[in-house]
Length: 291
Image (cartoon, rainbow, N blue to C red; front, side, top):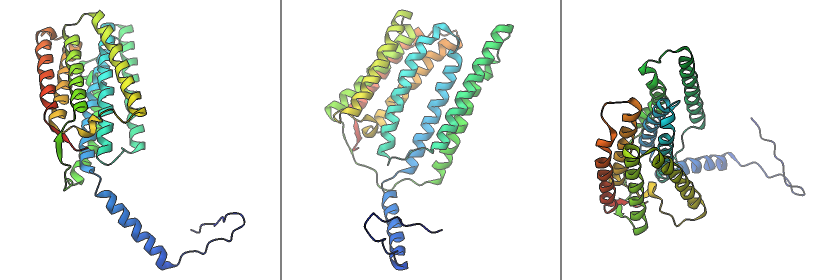
């Protein structure tokens, strides 16, 4: 394949490089790619992708149960705000791992597929309501399981394919702004658990837009200022563990209500909220990453 040279007006076309010069360029390109790989943690990015797959699966499953339930609409907005919070933290963590992005084609395919499943599921519930039938319980979990397979299987494959990076970034104490930001997220998680478990409908209606507005303000501020803490990049395992436990507690609290279990969420939600807040406060005084 030949390339047509288009010289600048008034100048002669450049002489094509010799074979030796062309080979030197190719060798230097390989060296640049090798140096780049030294700063990219592909295995860490794969673990992050697996965490995203699990989160998307849980989120889609909760959405499937919440669709059509008027009492769950406001509570679902709280879950949506926390999901967006996780997305922001995950993106910050991905940039710290070397900016490895998921395949655009794979992302679009997964998004379109999951969206189509939710639309089909919604239409199925509508038809079932019109004819007076009921959808089997297992169908509610099907979209989430498919989402987990579509996004999670490639992540597991990458985890097995790539080796851990040899040199890990050093740990350091969180700065005061990072510590306060971590505690603030703990307050948000604990407050969400408490409100979802024991709060009135009015309190849930109040908290949902507040969380959405707070997330939007944080998202905008992070793009016009570099002074905000980039928590996803500096959190280490203690802070991420606190966030995971908070997400599990939120999921358990809303799942009890959506599934209509005999156990009341108000019996464990206050204790879970206090426990999650204490875990976040403790993690804020532990070492983070030198991101």
